[in-house]
Length: 98
Image (cartoon, rainbow, N blue to C red; front, side):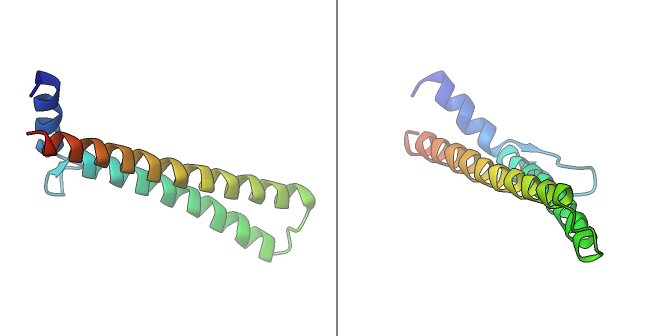
C-alpha cells in the first residue's frame, strides 16, 4: 500500500477534540457535526422568517427572501450529503486496501 493510503487511514481514526467538553472524535465525525451545526443555523433563519410571515409580513419581498433561504438550505443539505458520502466512500476504500 502506498504512503498516501497509510496517511489517510491514520487520519480517519486519529482523534481530535471537537470542543473541550466533549470526548475526542474522529475528524470525520467533526466534519459531520460541523455540517449539522451549519444546517441548524440555516434552519433557524428559516424559522425566524416563517415566524415573521405568520406574524403578518406577507410582502412579496419577504416571501422571496424565504424562498432564497429554502433554496440555500436545500443546496447546503445536498452538499453535506455529498461530501460526507464521498469521504466515507474514500475511507472505506482505503480501509479495504490495508
